[in-house]
Length: 529
Figure 1 (cartoon, rainbow, N blue to C red):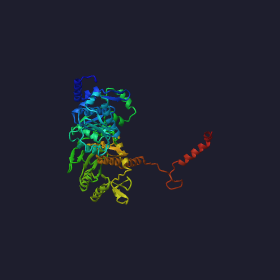
Figure 2 (figure 1 turned 90 degrees about the vertical axis):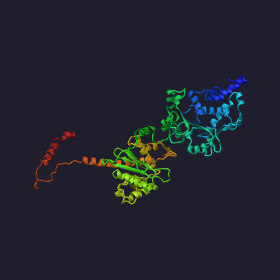
Figure 3 (figure 1 turned 45 degrees about the vertical axis):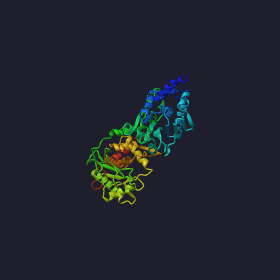
Figure 4 (figure 1 turned 120 degrees about the vertical axis):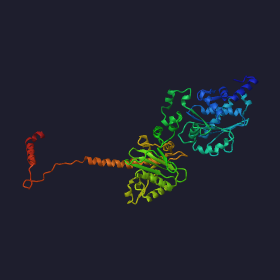
């Protein structure tokens, strides 16, 4: 629009652009198209809405599908901010330094390709590969995700690209927050990458109104050039997780969670409020009281004692495989020993299993000293179950359940199998929340950073024992019943007397044998022929 405007019209146009970033971008910004080269930037409706949100809200968190042009629209907004505002300090952070530098490159290209009369506002004074400074004092730079990123700077705007994919961003965010204390803004954008990371927590909290971020979700279907046919063709060869991550904006299905999103949905549907919340800390939740006609299993995991995890136990009905009670808290070792002892006694001297980690042994010793009658034992170095009376006579038996680096994946695999096949019922939302953040990290199943897996591992041991101990015992019982049922009583008696013996009674069997022999001799030629 252009170079032929009068001075008065130029001033009017500059004022109009300064007031409305959408007008500025739609009329003057250009972008590089992969097939058409440099083209005018014409924003779609959802991009316009996003630009207004950048202006209206100090902090924005954007959950997006791939290839929606959000990085580009963010770059355009940054171009507008730098041109029409003095002394703006903008920092771009991404999963890789190259990704952040690419966004800075887009900003630079947009500014350089503006009509010449925009030079009256500002021009590039210092030009580096991953940063540049305008002569109005505004500057932008790309940064890695190192711990000192942005330190000692007062930021006007922080752009976090692919925030969900930045490992350990919680700590970096803690360091960055003070740099925006003087009114700085933040744009955090990303496709989902599972649950439990900074981006997921920030987005969910923004939806609940628990922080000052404004949430926006951009599903693939908002793109005006995409339809169902496009989606099916694009995702035909992608895994369910990749589709959820890159196109469906689905947190639960996008990460490397041990339990699939579909199975997590089934667990959530079975969760319910406990009938009682009791105990000294009200952390002992009960769904069903003790039924003397049923058998129960109590499985506990003891806190390391550093304050970061919990002491927990589950109580399960072994017949219906249903959770009837659960505890999660941070009592002392002595107190936890008493809590789990009383709970197991209350449920009919249930088989009591405690993971025998370092502090777990302390709890086990207290349970043995208290004379608990149904404590789980195994052969040292194995998971071979020993009844308590036998274990007391065997030198290499150990109380409790042993989990090692080698056996942990096997136990977790049993948990996944039980949940996938609907073989176990979880009533507790606390357990559900832990399962949501239980993921594969470097081939090891564990909680995401900053989360706990105490209830999950206790549940995994529960599944393992149900299958390998109680299941085998039940099968052995069924085999014995089957063997007994297969035995029959035969009333036929063998006559061992011979002619001349007292009590001899002819049953004509010898006569029948002689008769059969005669028939064979007479007609055997037929058979041979």
